[in-house]
Figure 1 (cartoon, rainbow, N blue to C red):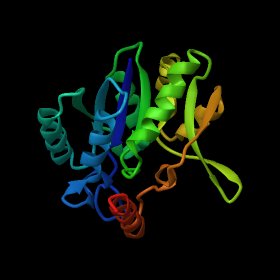
Figure 2: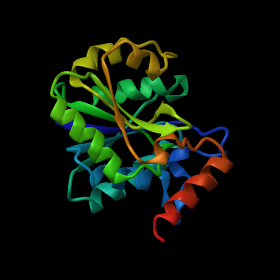
Figure 3: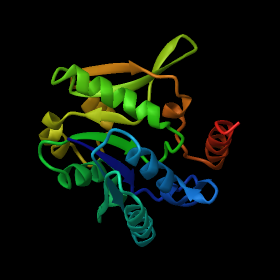
Length: 210
């Protein structure tokens, strides 16, 4: 089983609003887009971790759940979201079945394509128990750059639970076996942190309709 854990708890201080609530593809918010992308992929369920302006996030997830027939969509609230993203990751892991693998999908990467998810999930499934982490990479300026979302195997559940509140996910990734999967999707590197990033994400999504 694979559960998409959407990290949507941050306040988005540099953006001026929570990233989850930013309108990326009018009228759709980043959260609506990410949930729809996950639901259309190979995942079995979607768990959104809320924090800042949780009531609004919960409302969006509830609406998405009522309109989604492919997979179950639900929300959990991380009351300690201000301590950092690690706590939200732990809250997400705690909310899924012990044997479930987890697609970690930060909501600030809303332009990632469905096919990208299916590629990394397909590779993870094909590789079996060998890699504990599967990460998408993009070749940029002759450099392989790792992006998001990524897959964490169910065997990492205890390791995630043991992470410190201020410990970045990359530290956990570096301690375990990683399989890099090349993808042709620049959005894996497009982190919507600022208004300028938001404008780029809007343009990228709009360009795919042409």
